Amino acid sequence: MRILLSACLLGLTCRYSGDGKAFPPLAELLNRADLSFVPVCPEQLGGLSTPRPPAERVGERVLTRDGADVTEQYVRGAAQAEELARLMGCRCALLKARSPSCGSGVIYDGTFTGRKITGDGVTAARLKSAGIPVFDEEHWTEFLDFIKEEG
Image (cartoon, rainbow, N blue to C red; front, side, top):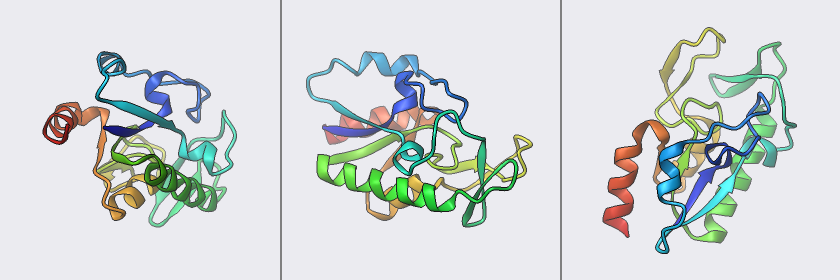
């Protein structure tokens, strides 16, 4: 089974802050013969640099802390991630929690205060609309259940 994966969860230095966010439990799955991962950073695919100013969703827009509108880059990156998932035959996605691009079910509220709201990042929403199940590292058990059932 192929799985679209937020590259930062592998520890790749693509997050807004210029670091990675390696998710150690993922290591146990990387060498399984029945799974393959397609790493992606939608923000980079959309044309944003690393590091880059922090951004949060504000309604349908994505704004940086200083007020710059980066919605176009997030939308472009989401389209590229969806196309990659389709081309590679990904059956689901494991994305970074709370990200304005990859967050699934919970994202930051756009005030840059750490407050969370119900919602999806731009890429997570697009993948879900395309029928691709989306998980994040905070729902690891549900992800493992999915790959076990679908495997």
